[in-house]
Length: 173
Image (cartoon, rainbow, N blue to C red; front, side, top):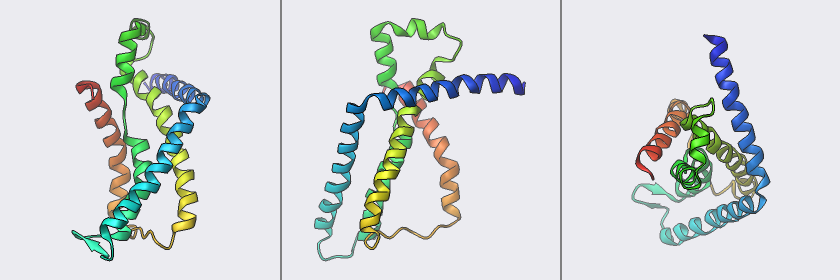
């Protein structure tokens, strides 16, 4: 049973690796995404800073907490966002779904790991961008102290990713 599971996981790992290479080959799309992320990270914190004005807290949320939210959001977005419905729709429209269904790999697994390649590339680029930004704003952004609840976040994150993916597949959005 262990060898069969290992064989199945190797197929998905190869698919994930192929998806990462394919994502890196679309430099234009990647560049637009990076520029969008930089704009998002740059514009919205300033909007919220102007909303806060001279106040340090609004509705129980401090300025530094709001800035930390905008700082971490691209990272979580890259891990959790799913466009499974677009991929499935494109396969149906182009007629590729029939060839995908006869391959020795589950179609939902194919869509998931193909999509995760793009997500992992986005995650690593987000981490690099956040590292650069954090170097300049480390005195302004205050992260909460690490606690036991953060370990729960690490456990819940993969489950959240899988549930959101399935929600997108089943509901079409």
